[in-house]
Amino acid sequence: MFNVNFLNRLREAELELVMENFRPGARILDFGAGTGAQASYLTARGYNVVAIDLPASGYGDSRVFPIIDYDGGIIPLPDASIDIVFSSNVLEHVDGFGRVMAEFRRVLREGGYCVHLMPSVPWRAWTFLAGLPTAVTAAGRLAADFTRPPAGVTRAQAALQNLKTGVGALIPIGHGTSPEGVSELWTFSATCWRSKFEAQRFRVLRWYPLGLFHTGHMVLGPRFSIQQRRCWSARLGSAANVFVVEPE
Image (cartoon, rainbow, N blue to C red; front, side, top):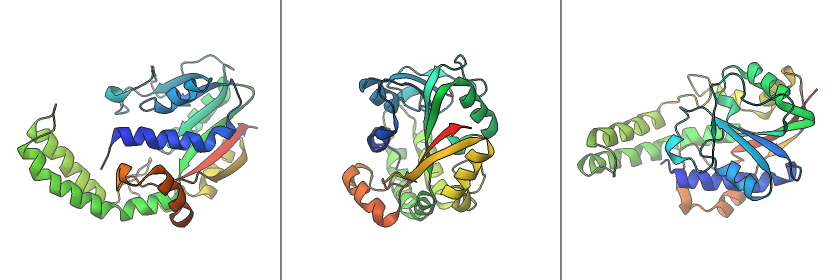
């Protein structure tokens, strides 16, 4: 079940595994910053971070870093003002992929590049498989939350949230821009991501599996430690692939 605190821990663990890709002292754009946990992590390590996200991203009440509201069009930054563009599990949600990549090209300085974490085929497959236990958990909470809802929500809101979680876990709904998730068994492949970057005239300098296992339903949550998730990624597959790309 979704847990924003555990999500923040996962995002910090991701950064721990990709820090070698960031030049010391760089000015970084955190694109689609979510709660801002990763922007905060990078700032604490000496980077100058600008974080942006859509105001309707769903993390407005959980932000831990100053985030600039972004309208989904022009990135609110001057030309050639950023050394590195960073995103984590964001670009699969972007409808205007070419427009966003053009904006990255505009804000990057000479010699600048991007570090993108993209969801993988193992993540998509394991998220499908994790749907049943998630639906069962949601069903078990439905009656309890309706009787005694969590603080700050009504009985109807609690029941609706559990119902949406349960139904959504059983139906192969798309995670990214596709309305269904089956096609993502291809579109989330490293080959497909690579071709999408190259189609926008971005050279793939390197890519590799991140080395962290998790699903979209957060099965076991913090009870399955980050270290265990790192170990199991070798057997079950990495939840994301890392792409380091630069404008041609």
